[in-house]
Length: 425
Image 1: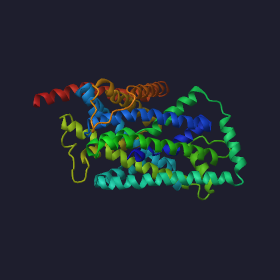
Image 2: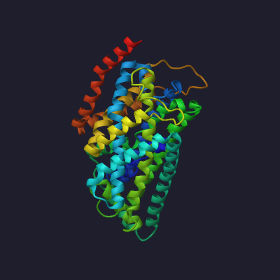
Image 3: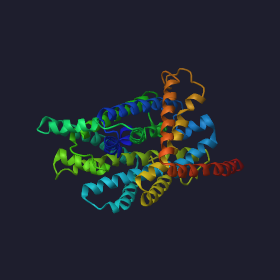
Image 4: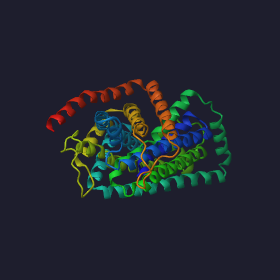
């Protein structure tokens, strides 16, 4: 699930962004290793919290235990109206862009195709956890195969008469000047590419042996992802020739044409479609678990959070997420959607991980994982969170403020909802 959730549109989109902004293969590899290490620090905190509170909801449960039900409600409000539909819409748009690039369709069709993809994977989710799991397993295997094919083709090209061209490309990229703006854009892109690993915490109630499974899945999954992104970046450098195109899609098409020929050049874009499909399946499966936890606390309508135990789905919440994601996909651009949901998600991600600082440290127990070198992992992770938030506030102030305004509306709503719950009790 970690690999399926994380490795989506970012598997090619973000390395392409780095090649166009940083312009240095060594700097790109350093960025991947840095982001992988920072994410692993946060993953250690999440692994501890997931074993201490093995319940559906993830961040919602951690925030409730550490900061109280009102903070947890505002997070759930944010997840419902900002984060979950935002990331679903962004994945839908990414899938649509590369699907149209593969088929040669007009870019104006992107919103409609994105909404159609979100609806299709929403229906897949409603079929049951078995169908979603199989989709994630197959797409995760396909992603690993994609990386192997891409790297193999790039190495074959280096071993053929294109060696000098690849070497000149590497030299050209390495000679670019690294500016603060380029580094900031690359850091944001790298964080987005690693986004989603924390969703495994939402499945804590359904994971067997969480003490053993959670840290292995989170840290091990991030190690695989870091290796995949590093290899793809190397392959893009080796496979590119001539000036770097202005957009990520055109860059991927150009690399595909260089590696596989003009006729098969669209194959690389088709690979991105497969990668995004797995992320959509994982997102739509994991997100409704938050609303299930809220309904158990009396903070979300029971009708929308009814859990289908036979299929392992939450139909009402899934339909809400799909509907809101379609609205965003039809009326917002990819960058606008990122600016809308990512800063809010990052804020609550850091706050929920910080629960390990607020809650008393657990005693050594066979069923609880404790993060090593405490409190170093959470301090390192919070430094990354604050840095990414600052970059978004400076770079996309309008979208960031819009998302923050929607989240702040959750504060007065929480008073109304929670006072009603108290009266009912």
